[in-house]
Image (cartoon, rainbow, N blue to C red):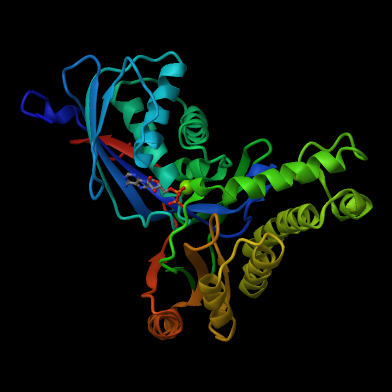
Amino acid sequence: MDRNSVNILDEIVVDSPGRINLIGGHTDYNNGYVLPAAIDRKIGFRLWRNSTMETCNIHSKGYNEPLHIDLRKIEKSSVEWHNYLLGVIAGIQKLGHSLEGFDCEIESDLPIGSGLSSSAALECGLASGLNALFQLGLSKLEIITLSRQAEHDFVGTKCGIMDQFSSVYGKSDHFIFLDCSNLDYKYVPACMGPYQLLLLNTNISHRLSDGQYNSRQNECFEAVAQIQKRYANVSSLRDVDMDILNNTKALLSDIQYQRALFIVQENQRVLDAVEALESKDIESLGSLLYACHEGLRDLYDISCPELNFLVDYAKEQSFVAGARMVGGGFGGCTIHLVHENHMETYIREISKAYLKEFGIDLGAIPVHTSNGTTHRKLSDAAL
Ligand code: ADP
Ligand code: MG
């Protein structure tokens, strides 16, 4: 990575945030509603042209095996993290853009595999950086779409659109109420009075590419296929309400019914949560978070003892309005709405209890909503 011959002012710096999803678990790939926000934890990129036509070198701090690429031949790698980035480059080329050689350094303060969507931050960050470095003229939606496709095609995780959308469209002090069926969205002010967002990381790491995420998705799609036998106009669980679900229960396996029931209820909870936020009814918002966790635990079956422990603990505290697991499941983080006056004590006490129960240190990350991906030339203000 010889930067001596490079004009340093041409260097592009990108901040690509992770995201939380306040509510709307697993509804995105079912064309439903979600309520995410970008957060003030991010992956940072520095990119510059390296004067070659086809060679790229990407180094990510803390990751072995830097990625060396020949732009004439993009293929999957046996190193998992390479594939997110290779997929983005392949996606850009597929849109008809030609890239030239570049070098890139990546550094992150985003916990990995914890439900904060480091994978989307990684994809969207590189796509935005290349867009700026080579002035490709990609729209935000193109960046989102090709990043998601990269994860599908090169990693094998059939993620919905929410993660990439939030990372790019995030807005400080707001949640994004997003309709995943048509990408209509509106910003909802994150007015929660004295309540602040706290993420607690179980430090049990999931890997979304390990199959469980995709199998939940298939179960939902299978449920839709069964429901379509009676309701031909249903194209996703988004089109299903409780009447339709009850009328088709006999066609569904127990598992399919439970997965579908969770999604139908969860879509309604997102609508209710937007209403609660808009009327600053934090108690109702908190109850919706607890109900969401119960559904993810009992109907969607993607929780684990560590996540349940944290949410059960939260329920006992009068200064916690609500809590739930976030992300793909089986580990990762919980999100808590905690009264600011009790934040420090809460973190201390719940960490102690968690360590006693599981012998694992709990990660505590107070977070704030943030703007989406930004890029700038080294000497410029953020664009
Ligand atoms: P999540 O998106 O919830 O963090 P995923 O399993 O979807 O979890 O994605 C995590 C994967 O993304 C990591 O295992 C790694 O391959 C890749 N990744 C995340 N952050 C980085 C980074 N800073 N550098 C390289 N790869 C990263
Ligand atoms: Mg991910």
